[in-house]
Length: 339
Image 1: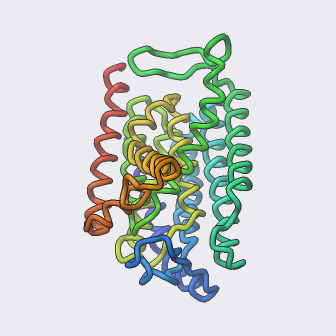
Image 2: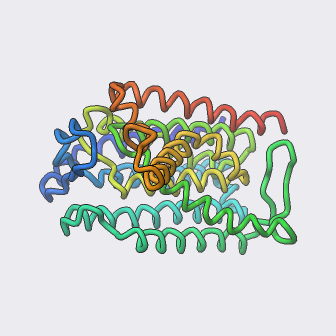
């Protein structure tokens, strides 16, 4: 049997969970505390000063566990090692990690400006958009150069993306990556929400990669899932640390990398349904308010609406994670039926 994914998940969990004993006190020492904006719910004021930028914990867990997983697979000649000999699968793994790390780096700069430079809004929207689109374009360029020629559409099959109408895939994919990265960032608004939802999404893509015999993505998803379990130990309500934009944008890059890595980015529309709803609620709220000076939701993104309706943070995390579970199952079903 192949235990690579299990080993990677356990190592990622251990590294992330144990790093909290070092990282969190260090963040407190540096006074890297979260600033709660006036526009947020009043009861969030008690979270003022909670250490942020804790995303470095699960980023370290993912990277270290992947390195151990590769060593194990190489020594015992497991599928993960042989997948890494395949040019495109190796590229999908490395480029996916690079995408997530670059997005995390953008988030780190944003956090740094907020926390150290005391500029609450961090990077300007224009700066952040430019960097995210640049990173997304480079990621897609690498995939194209390495041999990505088709994308899979459920119940239709593989569709060419290198000629004719199929070329529209690339600009759509660019905005897809940009949109989902920021949608995950929006989901990170209450204790444990983004980490719990992304844990469910990671497990969904782990199943998808398993059915497709893609050991490279299976191991990558296992690494993130294990790391997030370790992070939730510190991030669950009441949170002792926040992931910050450093973590949420890394997570956005990772879930995008999962979807492209299995050759089915369209499935993220189902697996990432919570991210999609969060982003749409924010867009609808802003657009409607600009037009009517009235609000549809009590507050956006939508998790704050439910807070203002009296839902506890734990209830929101549980319900949203269940919705993510339903979406992930629906995303995996077309793969099962196509086998």
